[in-house]
Length: 368
Image 1 (spheres, rainbow, N blue to C red):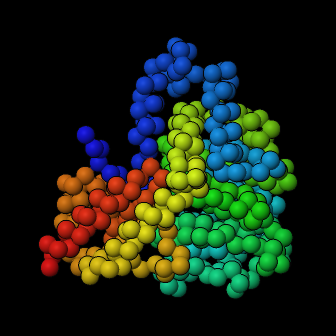
Image 2: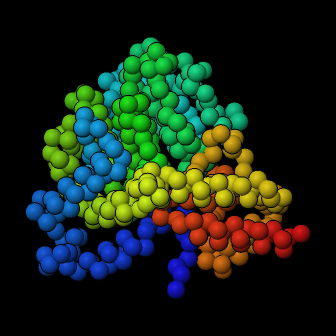
Image 3: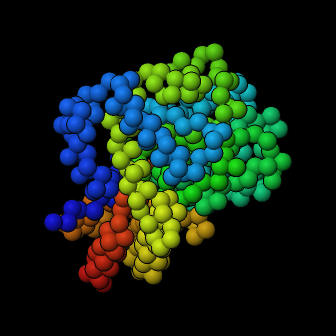
């Protein structure tokens, strides 16, 4: 029996094979006599799970040796405070505001540093991206922050900005919560990346931080010890009890990702090709439709989060009711923008997007 297709923006759908494996191992992990939920985080069983997860993630994302991978808690919202606590040195930090999440990041950073908005797309309703060539980066910026994929407004940096070409030596910080592992990362352009796992990698509770080693050890004196990146790194993410079950589930997802292939491509490059195909299918249909519209500029449309609107919004409730009856779940847009939103994370198969397009076509025909 086909499970419904879950288009939630997060916590989001997970690969069915991962859920099945977790269910099979729930009561007894590999003959240990324990569920992963019951294990000591310092015991050999969980340590092996955590070490494998970190190694698999490093391989999947091609993380260089001079970056540390940290398993933390608090999600992206907590990182909006933890990043400036670690990297700002109480000075100036620059933000590119491209939607709700980068707005929240800049607002939170003002508690710990002088936060400057160097570019924004607010004037056009967060439907485009300000070109890096026009950014006026502060001469004394400690870092430049972008949200490389805005979940709510559906804009994505398909190429990360190269700050060196702008004459800037400050590290680039990216919030890649909603598209981590959906595409490759050019680490030569990144100083730190963070993201909650609950959109593309696992259940809520785990936050990933990938940080260049030279950025460790500069936390403000007011930074809590558990949020000091150097302390977390020095203790291999075990300074406090980590989100053990979320790490385990993410680890299973990493293994699933490593098994995925498209022709000669494997892992994240294979997923990137799938994600391009899924996004092209949905955007292509919307653009040809007379009922649906996407307002984002075509050069920066998100592959992960596709907001769209019915030109006749009086039909919204009927659209959502029909979608649910067709096994297409959680398509209602974020409350701040309305409309609809389909999130096409790695776990969403092409068949799910095909089913959504078929339903959207049928619904449009009934409105004629």
